[in-house]
Length: 420
Image (tube, rainbow, N blue to C red; front, side, top):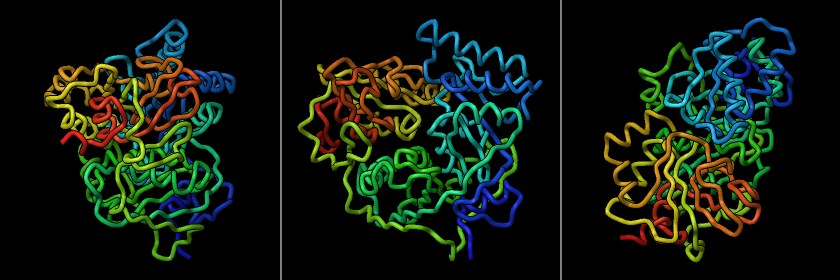
């Protein structure tokens, strides 16, 4: 019997010829990372073990992105913990303010992960890197501490699910819409501890930004990982970025899946997920009555250049509605600079938007856009749980960048087509 791309990567890193769902394995790791909220705990666990140094200083990253720049004394103390640890162990991949970015955009953009890798991070959205054909998944801080010491961890081989997307993508429909629709179809636990393999002609047409978004949000369906087999677009992305060798894997034709779901994308319109779960996915045409107070464009799901160019194309020559706050969050300093070079920053500011240095900020209700009681936001982030972006009586509606930009102008959730 054949193996899936996920099973092949796990088997290779476990030193086995094959693995099967439910099997417990010990695997060697190519890369590990944590952020300013999770890594301090991992560092404490690392120090409890009594290790003198990390397993490989070049394969560990510490990314202060959730509350950076420091929003208060507590966050400053947490980041200092990372900074001191990085200096002590000579870890080059600590990213200071001015160099940092949102971890799940920064790490692949710097070529720290690549096809065929097995990587873990103390953040649930670590599954993002599956867009490169890697197995990547989130773990707890204790597991990260042990991984920094040993360079290995244990896993249970997940069951395999395949999602086949076919048809031509309609205008304004992106990877964000495909994953929101998928989560709406199977539910937030529809892929619980399963591998979500995304394939089909529509996936081939989606750019890397859309693929990163889809794999990022596999966790919102309960998935252990999301993954897409590498193709020419993947190779073009890693060319000149990747810092080490790689191995391309793909699923065998006779690989076994516990479920195969086919989705015709040609019938979709942009999707909006209503509070308070990503599974509450509806077409944007069913959301046009919802007034908003804030629109957020950015985060590890939609803070890439492709996303910001779409937003700018809609905002150019228009003004943000007087009742709406528009916040733009480029995901890395490189993207921020490119926005300036291409004139996007000017478009955002002239429209009435606020452009921030890279940060997770409002996504987790940290800073740079926290909601008050009764306020509503449309956001390109990945979660809309109760209190996720602020007050427990606020509401978050998830969308793609085009819808978020159009909504900022309209003063309510709406489609870019309404502005034509």
